[in-house]
Amino acid sequence: MTDQPPREQWGTRLGFLMAAIGSAIGLGNIWRFPKVAFDNGGGSFLLPYLIALLTAGIPLLILEYTIGRKYRASPPAALRALYRPTQAIGWWQVAICFVIATYYAVILAWSLRYIGFSFTKAWGDDPNGFFFNDFLKAADEPGTISAFVPGVALPLILIWVVTLVILGLGVRRGIERANKIFIPLLVVFFGVLVIRAVTLDGATTGLNALFQPDWGALTNGSVWVAAYGQIFFSLSIGFGIMITYASYLNRRSDLTGSAMVAGFANSSFEILAGIGVFATLGFMAAQAGVGVDDVVSGGVGLAFVAFPQIISEMWFGQVFGVLFFGSLVIAGLTSLISIVQVIVAAVEDRTGISRTSAVLSVGGATGVVSVLLFSTNGGLYFLDAADHFINQYGIALAGLVLLVMVSWVARKLPMLQRNADATSAVLLGRWWKLCLGVITPVVLGWMMIDSLINEFRENYEDLPTSFLLYAGWGVALAALVVGIALALIPWRRPSPALTEDEDRDLLTKGEPR
Image 1 (cartoon, rainbow, N blue to C red):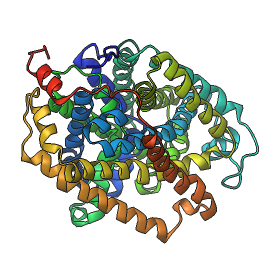
Image 2: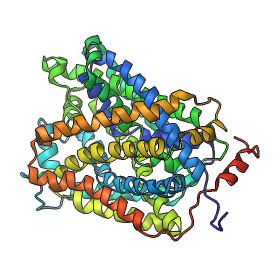
Image 3: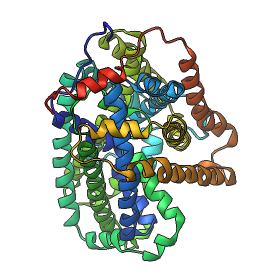
Image 4: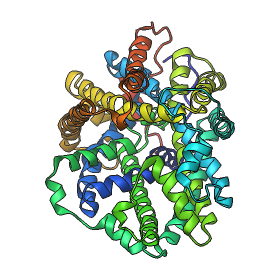
């Protein structure tokens, strides 16, 4: 054993589950899942979605939980202890988290402002023009930065202050307590929103459009790829969050049960979000006298253009707006906390500095980059490009490489399975190794190939090639290069991970679960 202080632990299993669920439930659940489901077979999409959850989502959660709990460290240190060459993957994940955190916080700042805008319906008759021109003051050309936007900077600074304060308080007093407040509040907010949405005129039409099954879509390979992609991106797997969170678990924690609870809770919220969003879009279509197909959108367009228009047309729409944008802030904040925690934990383990120093230094630096780059009139273009490329060629690719290294090269799955089974109520069978060793790598590999084909066929969002080279491809490549570079720096501090003998000894002492 080393002379390092004991690693902080979650106060309760519920606290860990709340944090894990909070990390998984984010902006993508609310504005990505409904459109993905609609575009890929509607109600029939739920079948490949459920299969993807069982064969990729939950198995990957169990893998990351096991690595984190066993080695009790952030991704770089935990993966180094697991199999030394994979340390670079851990630092790659840290770099990915840094990129995501810088722009993810900006969307929360927009949502925070829109809570206030909802009271007065400040967007008037042109939500699209208000968002892009009046609020963001978006530049005419990508890559142009010529003005600072105080209306974005001020709420963004507030978001970062709240995030860093919660992280500074620690895992138990900060992250756990915050999630125990935020998750119930999110459920209440969104539950009320959904109840209101399903009572709107046209809601039934919207729900029929979402859930009407197109069984022929099940023979389309792209539908299955979309299902696996949605599960992968919505569960916070592939970029070190769950390894980090699990490193604070008690050694006797039930891993498979926790993964199942977190996985199904996340998927349940996604379906709830689909009901709320499409019931509301059905109302919008009825008001405009058009089909639901004509008003369906996702992402930024759904949240900051379509929904404000709906709020303007809805009786007592101000309350609906506050609930919707409040839900975005809460869901996003719990995810942002988990993303920044990966960076903070990695620096703590690597340097040995105190938590407060790590939060103020690396967390503060991430916030400064976020404010300086994304509070400008060119921020939207950088956000769009970075988000697309870091997701496709950062998170997904890092997950694929990790699976190949752990299952095929290092052959560590049997050992990790024994570790998870030692304290879990539901034992893992051959299906777990089959899913992680064959099914998920094959699907992720196909996702990479399919994505690259589309990438080279036409530029993402028709953005200029020169801009994509540094704001998209450059960002994704930089995360990889930084990860490799950090892994090559000599590791002078001993790893916080325990040896095999110490780990086995702890697991047989009968510590309470």
